Length: 126
Image (cartoon, rainbow, N blue to C red; front, side, top):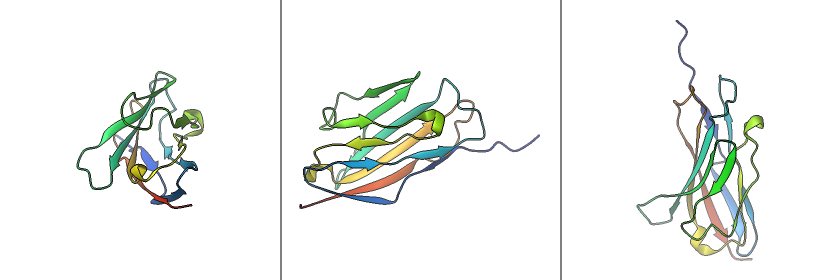
């Protein structure tokens, strides 16, 4: 039997944005399986200095869902395309409170084993 190939998720290690502008949080992935209808993509955010991470975005059953929590709900845009192995989002109108770590997690059943990938956002003055 061939070994199961895990899903691979890629993000930049860090991105920089300025207050009031927008930034793209890129997330791409590679899966040995055909991209199924059941693919799901989740983004989590852990604010700088915080222990807790919150789910801010979820893509499932072919639909993007912006989670109704946190300060991102009015400022987030889905720009990904799972068929192109892209799970990227844009955060608009950046503020210092957006400093922190964003995690992109992709599951493409039956290919559900794999590490999520993290990108740290640094928001700077104009």
